[in-house]
Length: 390
Image 1: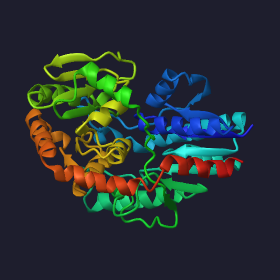
Image 2: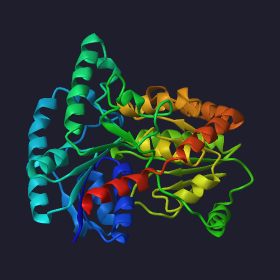
Image 3: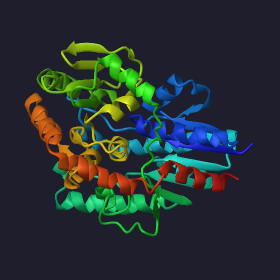
Image 4: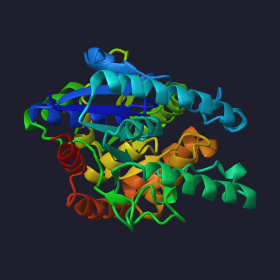
């Protein structure tokens, strides 16, 4: 049996959902797939009925503060101690690979599967949209920038152990995660393969059914799919609900809180406003929407671009990668960003009004979407994986 082993970063759902999509294609092509992940990734795989194919790795992630932001004052001082967990991960991966004996190992943003696979002679294909560690702004003085550069160069050498490093992003000047490669020479290491967002083929009747069930269509729809680690969601959701009470005077509003174990039944919370705990019709609502209000995760931005939707992005507080992603999205003129520390219902209402009222945002997203359509990141990744798994 031609076996493929996916080592997937378990924080959030973006990494694991694209792994599931690729695994489905690989299965259709006659490959067997096993996953190694932790945290939300493992929970989501179990919810999809794939728990029997999961190796639950030791969890290694950042910490979040009570306000729902990245807790740099907890993480950075403890950074040396996380190395012990990393070593446990490498040992875990070696044991799991020895039992499974794959043809190829696929690392989605995790170093431990890379180390384990290379130590055992397995080929490795790595998928990334974060090539280096970005420090929070408060640590990015001269010394911080020096450490960031050293860490970036070191990580680059580690990722380069892979047989292939695939950057799941657009090439310059449209690279959303450009801050994650700035100052590094990566042209001889990475291949830009485009976004790995899902191909969506919606039936008109399904879209119409969602429109009718929620009474949509007469006014612009602002869709707010909340994503990211669970501790980061509460304040964002509360602010969205407060802003929606004002925005619903002019727009239809649908908020998805992104709780994977929550009910899929929508609840009306104001005139023109609907709230999902978990939204089973996200693709249909993306199709119907005029604008998104969302976090600045790489997968979310890829979907906005591929579906030609401008957005108001609110990166997780103190989360360097999301802050940088939102800044690039804003600089390309594809929407607006609101920093988490500046987030209020009033600021959200104003930003949404600006984006909906200015057609230039939609035009620019459409132009970048045409660039993105030249790529098919998912198919390209699968093609490269299969070339090592034959």
